[in-house]
Length: 261
Ligand SMILES: C[S@@+](CC[C@H](N)C(=O)[O-])C[C@H]1O[C@@H](n2cnc3c(N)ncnc32)[C@H](O)[C@@H]1O
Image (cartoon, helix red, strand yellow):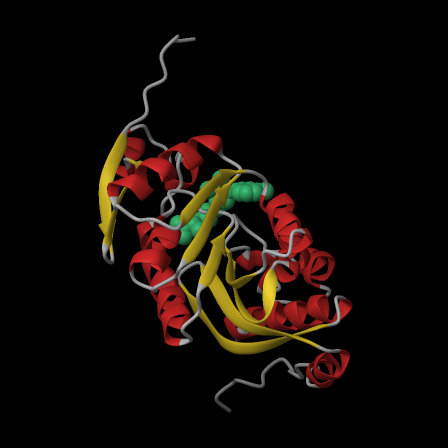
């Protein structure tokens, strides 16, 4: 084993910010996919971040947290373009956190706190210390299901949570067992599986929030590339949450429903 660790970084720009992250071309030359990057950055998720920034600024929100911040690009953009006053950027990968600190300085931005910690621990700390934020972003590898409880506790009442899910095979009903275990949804792959996946994610968020006496009102949802995304406004109140629960129902579909004849 070599005693030296070499990290190939590259300077990227997205929106109004510049930042260092893993050199994806160098990684590809080694035959490794972007998911194996020591510091994660996926340029194809730019629209995901663009929409988050637009929502944040159009609702004139003030504080934000990206607790799975990777290179920090989303956190930097929330500050530089979204007009956030305070941003918390956290990642369990301490190397990512080190690079984020460099990226904050590079953009000459103040009001961004960087931490290396587990996202759930950090979300629970935010709730416990009453430092809840106006906007929280949940952008994990795969399913958001294991994180949603903690993240919901960390958002202010009246605040927004943005949730990405990249675990399409379970959500789309290709793995019905995992769909049931992770999302509490019973179903199988249908011709409109993306729509079904988005609705399954929304249903899961509404039911998870209801357990915390919170109402997760869906504001916007869409699917793009390899992920689905939904935004919710979080309000307190059993009545509100009951009203949302009553809107959940079944998808009725018979084989052949979409046949031409
Ligand atoms: C999909 S990337 C996030 C991308 C980032 N939000 C963006 O817009 O570029 C997921 C990140 O979550 C981090 N991560 C994985 N598990 C975590 C955990 N339990 N707590 C905190 N961060 C975690 C990974 O190190 C990785 O950087």
